Amino acid sequence: MIESERKIITASAAENLDTINERVVHRLIPMLVAENITRVIEYESGRIMPRVDLWNCVGMKMDKIFMAQQGRYGSRRDFSTSLLVDKYTILKELGIPKKGRDIIRDDDDTTKSWLEKKLEQLFSSGAVYIDSVGVNICNNCGYLQSVDSVSLASCTVCGNSRFHSEKRNVLMVDIPKDRESLIKDKIIYPQNTKYIRSFFDQLPPRIMISRVREYGLPLDSIGLEGYVLDPKIGVALMPELVAEKYELSELTLTQGATVATHNIPYTSVLTNGFRHTYLLLPKIPITSLEEAKNIGLSFMARYLPFAILTHNSDISPARLKIIREEYARITWKIDTIIFSLRSEEGQSVNLTPEDHQILTEITRDFIEYRVRVGQKKLGKFFKAQGRRYAEEMRHKGYYLNPTDIDTIERIVKLLYG
Ligand SMILES: [Zn+2]
Image (cartoon, rainbow, N blue to C red; front, side, top):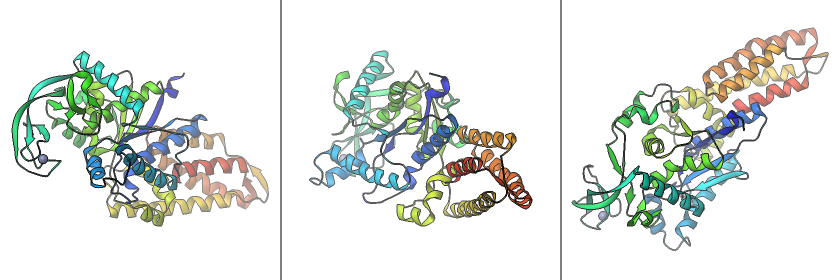
């Protein structure tokens, strides 16, 4: 396999929890970014890329909602599945059909047995270890909340705010002193990583990764009966599972910037054999599917996921409005030019080799995440080349040949929706 075929881009395992029936789009942005870039890679390379969806179905919030709805779902897994069914309904409306996608959940049997084996390896190499550590135990329900060096708000299970400290054997992982090593050469976007680095500087020197939960990966096989693996570790190990399954040399993950410390440190410390890189995305305003439809699905699902890669901070509602106005202006201009070029009176001419070269450069810019550069070149292409063709050629009685029109249209559709 050639090297470029051993890279894919996918979204980091997303938490499979929405407020039920809240048909939201903003949480799916990392998947849309990965999908859009994958489509450009496919256009450019002419080959089909794997689509891999990673889901975090194990977690305390989901456990609690499941408990509260006792009886409505046959099992905890059925409950998780029903949440996913809702998500794929929304994704379909956003132009991402479920068919052909490899859906990997952290509560799948195959994922669990892979994780168990991986964890045993990490335990025998000493990368994770059991230690007697002072932990905070809830006075009311006895829940093991955290290591006792962490300041507390309230118990995750019962909400009580009184704790006492006890020594317990728990599973720990060390975070290297050199925090730079966790992210060095890994963050593709944003270019300025100063504030992201500050999250990493605040990590404690070691972290407890065993939890007391009903649902999750049991730690019996490494001698910690009654505990499960912290879900964030499952999430952090999943990229290696994907790399193994698809024989990848590199996996680029898209995810929200604010949750960078939830998985990157552990993926860096606990996995190997492949390169993992990240696009850490700014947030967009909370958007329901209905709102997205009103705004326009082409904009929301195709243009916006690229456009956010040209912004350095979270997208406010006011900023979103400006991006929408830009989009409306650009697409109107492009539509007008393409309409003029398509005229079929007179003699057909071809795009010049230079024009083709520019179009190739533009798709490469998007694949290599230089979205702003690519957008500028496309703007220039339509301003100079497009106008020239459209006006001068029409004047002389020429029109652009249909194959070249198709090429331009395909690229515009890929990049602008
Ligand atoms: Zn409690």
